[in-house]
Image (tube, rainbow, N blue to C red):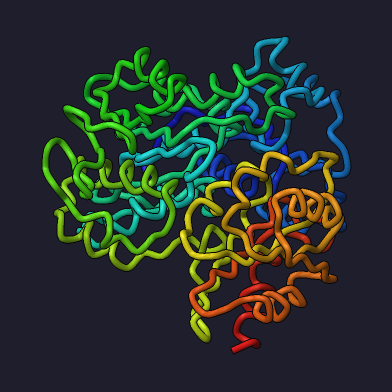
Length: 450
């Protein structure tokens, strides 16, 4: 860790805890800052806040009082999930107090370079693929960010021998100042988080921050098949590395004659890749490009792609039983995420779908249900999804209480060579705390079936 004096004796407010806030507060305290932590959760229900209190850090819990701005803070480090409409954030911006996320802090203390990955879909898979390829190639990677490990905590222990592979959300990227990844990636851009950003333009602007500080000495890997991503690349000062699943490129990562290629070199036959789905080829091409730029040998890339079957809950291969293959795509919490899962298979699909009703209909799924032979629904949205299923001509439709009961029913409808796919197209909160819990219940039900 770099021993920086940037925050020595500065008054800093850490707004919102969770993992990132706890780590940032403790780190700033070590760096000599006068830290105050403010979290909405009451102290009695907040073990993280109590732990910081024991370290001698000032803690204010139970609400976000705007009066905190009267205490003369020189910087706010906010939890990415707290919106900029929060009165404290609005007030801070109005009087010129910088507002950062802990990703910026991680960059400032890190001895290791960063490989940053963002985009609407595929971030976690791409991040994991790069980590696995670099690990296989003995490049000493560390993994961090929105994938579950706090960036500043990882950066504390990193050395010049490491590379930090970091998944970044638009929320995190809005709070950077000097953060400059050695390699930046945008996988793709679709409508997402508009309730947070307000407009698509603001969302794209946040994503574009990943390359805003890059120079020619850095690399920007980008999706050349998307006009908006290409426009970001046109404005970037980095060395540009395009990837495409639709066109053969003069440089970068692409497919040609059944091969994935990089800068004119054939790396691997597509048919040898274990990870299913056309959409995953975007993730594979961008990950391969990053791996090649860091000197990972082809053999290491090939070994990973022959064995990597997916990140947990993201089109994750679970098992095969009686000729049926089971896939857990519980992370598909919206229609946009379920569509590529349905496109990933040529075999007949038994689809398990349903969950929290956010008021939307599911007609967008209609063109992609042609390969679905049976539909098992659950949760609040079951009637809406069943309607679309009937319009798609699906004859076998059954409603059950939950995911656990859906698995044996799906098996009864299935035949050898069918795919049994959990891809709910809905959030899980009507029945489960998280999509991870829903996915774990599905996995357990598959093992019980076996």
